[in-house]
Amino acid sequence: MDIKPFLDIASRDHSHLCPRQILGVRIGLKGLAVCDVDASSKAKHLLVISETDGCFVDGIIAATKCTVGHRTLRIEDYGKIAATFINAKTNQAIRISPTLDVRERANLYATEEKRRYFAQLQAYQSMPDEELMTAQEIELNFNIRDVISRAGKRVNCEKCGEEIINERERIIEGKIYCKPCAEGGYYQPA
Image (tube, rainbow, N blue to C red):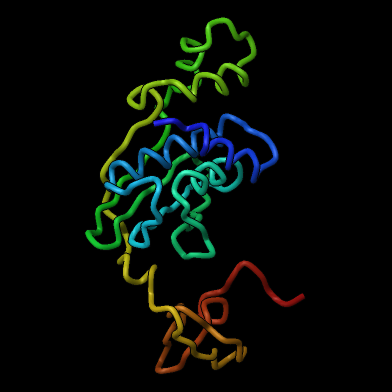
């Protein structure tokens, strides 16, 4: 498959092309293939969980058309270049990541390039899948239906009063709370 159109999308959205975007595109295309999704269509039953943000995700989005706004892309920021592709109809989950020695292997595909960054930029576009990445079937530690939830469901937190959407409320002793009020969040009032 010609990856150039996907690289063009990723570089346009990110304002340049870097090795991590190429990995995102290649891993995204591999994820579509293992989930039997055509790259030219938009699969509403596909959920992608990226283990980092930034350039890599721009490549994933370019290849899969999955986005946070469409609720088909999630970020679990582990600081790893990896993504899991989940078929929400079958619960099949495949985690794809670069091979552990991918940076060293890149040098074998760009022998004339002395700068590591540019060797990766060149090599990641042509390396065979089996040398570039690994795919592993995994079991999720959560129910996929809880992640997808039901759009349009709304309740209000009984402590702060703010609206909670998509079934993200917590019920404690019969009362409805948002996650920050129930468990703590990433912020607190100043």
